Length: 276
Image (cartoon, rainbow, N blue to C red):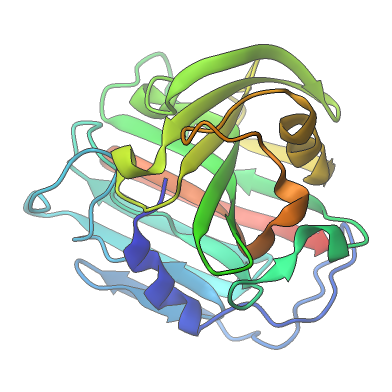
């Protein structure tokens, strides 16, 4: 769940070219970029390191001494991060991510012919203990109303470890949802409770998460999650019926959202594509 400060990072966004599923179609930025940051954010090759002193997710204060994050990037489909975060699993410290920005308030959701993504990523294993390891690997998309009001953030958690697994996603409102080829839980939280200004944060958390180092997901239809919400009969945190078809997609991203990484661990993406 992201803090509003992430909007600053949108100054460097994805190219608007269409992506083919399964192919690394980004050829605009091919040089290797290495960045190490303690505070502030970096925008390199259309990847972002959010401000590590801008903590969100229910915890506010100074970053513990020694916290750092290191980013490398060849392209939007080949990048990674290594981090040491002494966060004790409280709050969210960073979301290194590859992003596409659709303007303000964005592109109307019904104007997309499709919205499909594939990704291969590598994240650290707990190896029997989640002490010092708390993160989720997730898609994240943001919806605005036509008059520019923040309405929904939708997260799709493909993998998670530690306190980032389920307990911080909000209140469980549905389980055993078959969307695409996977089974999900659905959590609901108020955007005001996490400080991002959105009316509601919906988090689809995959059941049966694998602890394999490297995982591949092909052809995930991101419309499946919005279709479920539209037809679920659920109310958002403002008491309104959900109708995402009337909203505008402002931003879409994939990355690693982490709270606690001790000792330092590495995350990477070796393939990432969007077709819309």
